[in-house]
Image (cartoon, rainbow, N blue to C red; front, side, top):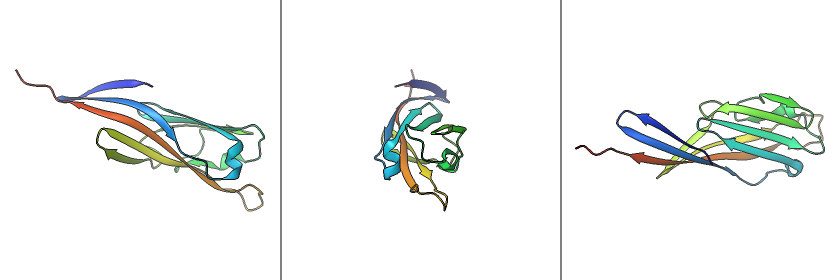
Length: 131
Protein backbone atom coordinates (compact mmCIF):
# COMPACT_ATOMS: atom_id res chain seq x y z
CA UNK A 1 0.00 0.00 0.00
CA UNK A 2 1.33 3.42 -0.97
CA UNK A 3 0.68 6.66 0.93
CA UNK A 4 0.94 10.09 -0.60
CA UNK A 5 0.52 13.46 1.09
CA UNK A 6 -0.16 16.70 -0.70
CA UNK A 7 -0.72 20.20 0.68
CA UNK A 8 -3.76 22.00 -0.60
CA UNK A 9 -4.18 25.59 0.72
CA UNK A 10 -4.72 25.30 4.49
CA UNK A 11 -5.64 21.67 4.64
CA UNK A 12 -3.56 18.59 4.14
CA UNK A 13 -5.14 15.60 2.52
CA UNK A 14 -3.55 12.19 2.80
CA UNK A 15 -4.51 9.35 0.56
CA UNK A 16 -3.70 5.72 1.16
CA UNK A 17 -4.93 3.45 -1.52
CA UNK A 18 -5.67 -0.15 -2.13
CA UNK A 19 -7.17 -2.05 -4.99
CA UNK A 20 -10.37 -3.97 -4.87
CA UNK A 21 -11.20 -6.37 -7.66
CA UNK A 22 -14.67 -7.81 -7.84
CA UNK A 23 -15.76 -11.17 -9.24
CA UNK A 24 -15.34 -12.22 -12.87
CA UNK A 25 -18.31 -11.91 -15.16
CA UNK A 26 -17.71 -14.48 -17.88
CA UNK A 27 -16.25 -17.94 -18.32
CA UNK A 28 -13.51 -16.70 -20.68
CA UNK A 29 -12.13 -14.42 -17.96
CA UNK A 30 -11.71 -17.35 -15.56
CA UNK A 31 -8.48 -18.26 -17.35
CA UNK A 32 -7.18 -14.68 -17.25
CA UNK A 33 -4.98 -13.16 -14.57
CA UNK A 34 -5.84 -9.53 -13.83
CA UNK A 35 -3.43 -7.42 -11.78
CA UNK A 36 -4.34 -3.88 -10.76
CA UNK A 37 -2.11 -1.29 -9.10
CA UNK A 38 -3.79 1.85 -7.84
CA UNK A 39 -1.27 4.69 -7.88
CA UNK A 40 -1.84 8.12 -6.33
CA UNK A 41 -3.43 9.49 -9.53
CA UNK A 42 -3.19 6.60 -12.01
CA UNK A 43 -4.08 2.94 -12.44
CA UNK A 44 -2.13 0.17 -14.09
CA UNK A 45 -3.85 -3.02 -15.14
CA UNK A 46 -2.24 -6.12 -16.65
CA UNK A 47 -4.56 -8.70 -18.22
CA UNK A 48 -2.96 -11.96 -19.24
CA UNK A 49 -4.22 -15.41 -20.05
CA UNK A 50 -2.21 -18.60 -20.13
CA UNK A 51 -4.10 -20.01 -23.10
CA UNK A 52 -4.52 -17.02 -25.42
CA UNK A 53 -8.04 -17.13 -26.83
CA UNK A 54 -9.04 -13.48 -26.95
CA UNK A 55 -8.01 -10.64 -29.24
CA UNK A 56 -6.53 -8.38 -26.53
CA UNK A 57 -6.87 -5.31 -28.76
CA UNK A 58 -10.62 -5.56 -28.08
CA UNK A 59 -10.19 -4.98 -24.32
CA UNK A 60 -11.20 -1.57 -22.94
CA UNK A 61 -10.80 0.03 -19.53
CA UNK A 62 -13.73 2.39 -19.58
CA UNK A 63 -13.27 4.38 -22.79
CA UNK A 64 -9.52 3.68 -23.04
CA UNK A 65 -7.72 1.27 -25.35
CA UNK A 66 -4.81 -0.78 -23.97
CA UNK A 67 -1.53 1.13 -23.70
CA UNK A 68 0.10 -1.96 -25.19
CA UNK A 69 -1.01 -5.46 -26.10
CA UNK A 70 0.27 -8.73 -27.52
CA UNK A 71 -1.05 -12.28 -27.87
CA UNK A 72 -2.58 -13.13 -24.51
CA UNK A 73 -1.68 -9.85 -22.75
CA UNK A 74 -3.00 -6.31 -22.48
CA UNK A 75 -1.51 -3.51 -20.38
CA UNK A 76 -3.24 -0.29 -19.34
CA UNK A 77 -1.57 2.75 -17.75
CA UNK A 78 -4.21 5.44 -17.31
CA UNK A 79 -4.84 8.52 -15.21
CA UNK A 80 -7.83 8.46 -12.87
CA UNK A 81 -9.11 11.55 -14.72
CA UNK A 82 -9.23 9.61 -18.01
CA UNK A 83 -11.28 6.68 -19.31
CA UNK A 84 -14.54 7.80 -17.68
CA UNK A 85 -13.67 6.67 -14.14
CA UNK A 86 -16.58 7.18 -11.75
CA UNK A 87 -15.91 8.73 -8.31
CA UNK A 88 -17.88 7.94 -5.17
CA UNK A 89 -17.11 9.69 -1.88
CA UNK A 90 -18.38 7.96 1.24
CA UNK A 91 -17.10 9.30 4.55
CA UNK A 92 -13.34 8.83 4.61
CA UNK A 93 -13.19 6.76 1.41
CA UNK A 94 -12.85 7.77 -2.24
CA UNK A 95 -13.82 5.01 -4.68
CA UNK A 96 -12.73 5.24 -8.30
CA UNK A 97 -14.52 2.64 -10.39
CA UNK A 98 -14.53 1.57 -13.99
CA UNK A 99 -15.15 -1.52 -16.09
CA UNK A 100 -12.72 -3.71 -17.97
CA UNK A 101 -14.72 -4.88 -20.97
CA UNK A 102 -14.18 -7.26 -23.83
CA UNK A 103 -16.35 -6.88 -26.90
CA UNK A 104 -15.98 -10.02 -28.97
CA UNK A 105 -16.05 -9.75 -32.74
CA UNK A 106 -19.03 -11.28 -34.53
CA UNK A 107 -17.01 -14.19 -35.90
CA UNK A 108 -15.43 -15.02 -32.52
CA UNK A 109 -16.39 -17.93 -30.28
CA UNK A 110 -15.31 -15.88 -27.22
CA UNK A 111 -17.96 -14.32 -25.02
CA UNK A 112 -18.07 -10.62 -24.28
CA UNK A 113 -17.56 -9.77 -20.61
CA UNK A 114 -17.41 -6.90 -18.17
CA UNK A 115 -15.14 -6.97 -15.11
CA UNK A 116 -15.46 -4.22 -12.48
CA UNK A 117 -12.25 -2.48 -11.38
CA UNK A 118 -12.29 -0.39 -8.20
CA UNK A 119 -9.55 1.59 -6.49
CA UNK A 120 -10.26 2.62 -2.90
CA UNK A 121 -8.43 5.57 -1.37
CA UNK A 122 -8.68 6.52 2.27
CA UNK A 123 -9.31 10.24 2.61
CA UNK A 124 -8.02 11.87 5.76
CA UNK A 125 -8.46 15.62 6.13
CA UNK A 126 -6.39 17.51 8.70
CA UNK A 127 -7.37 21.10 9.43
CA UNK A 128 -4.58 22.95 11.27
CA UNK A 129 -5.51 24.80 14.45
CA UNK A 130 -4.69 28.49 14.79
CA UNK A 131 -2.48 29.69 17.61
